[in-house]
Amino acid sequence: MPLHIIIDGYNLIRQSPSLSSLDRRDIQLGRRALLDLLASYKKIRPHRITVVFDGISDSVYSSDKEKIKGIEVRFSRRPDSADTVIKELASGYREKALVVSSDMDVVRFAEAKGSATISSVSFENKIRMAASYFNGAGMESEEEEERRTDTRKKGPDRRLSKKKRHNISRAGIL
Image 1: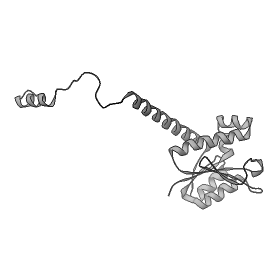
Image 2 (image 1 turned 120 degrees about the vertical axis):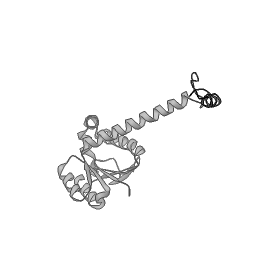
Image 3 (image 1 turned 90 degrees about the horizontal axis):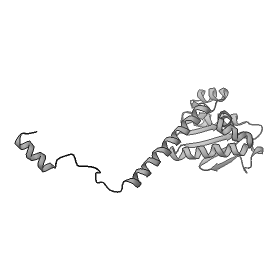
Image 4 (image 1 turned 30 degrees about the vertical axis):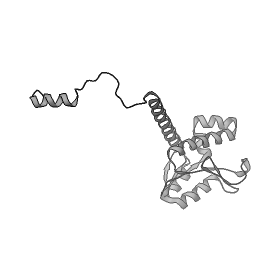
């Protein structure tokens, strides 16, 4: 069964230097940047990803659960917090879940339920490395395809033909 990544959305945004600067300008910019980052990661690793944010009333989204760019986005409803929703998800998925949060209360609860955990900063670093590796490898292969259109070797031929090698070996020179 595939892994389900459950992310404490605002925790990840506010732990990240790049995402938090966008979040300070406009909360929707921070959320959008996080979803873009996760969507690019999902192209590499097609895990199920759920991002949980606090408060539906802050949202421009019409419901408490939406799918954006292949990422499930959930907003907690009052009186529940995002932490409560994350705990419920971790309880349901148990060892099939990876919980991304730096909130120790959430981390301890998820681990007690059998879920794997990773800090927000570590997770962001890993998905950025994966994206840069994937994008870099993809670019090299495209450039290589453009440069090379046939299978013939380039440069001087250094190896003797098979017939000449056979004749030399029969003569006992090699």
